[in-house]
Image (tube, rainbow, N blue to C red; front, side, top):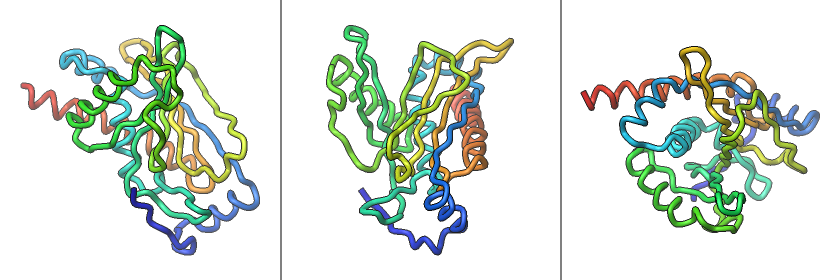
Length: 219
């Protein structure tokens, strides 16, 4: 785990950081529908599960943007060189969820294989964190039973937690499109609406380019 300290005076949004840290500490959440129409058809042809692909895609973009990796360690501001996804899995026998994590790799095939190893190992557990916890991670949860239009986490004493949290909902049909609700909860001291909107746009672009590239390779 590599954590790089930052001199706050080097932040290009120092005034905003100080304001939302000291004067008006707050978090906010935005939910958007992501177009996954072509992705669904592609994954079905390759027999690939949707959830790990979404975890991989979100992880790729998180690790591509330093703002999404900002954190505080021992009350010092910095960023993690790499963040691994910590995500929820569901035990259908007990109706309990667990948190596990998979080491991030920017190669999807490697990440997918590691995900399957972790999932198969821990899918029948009742423990909350059967794999243990790591510091350099970010959180993803999935609520595949409902297509929500908004989602919000109310976390006590959360104003020092800077890493965004992602929640995935049930995808649904909208005319000829297949849309997936995704909520991002962010700390306003390090992220603004612009950053979240850009993330949503980049995610759709990333998915589209991934499908296009790999479809071309197949053909």
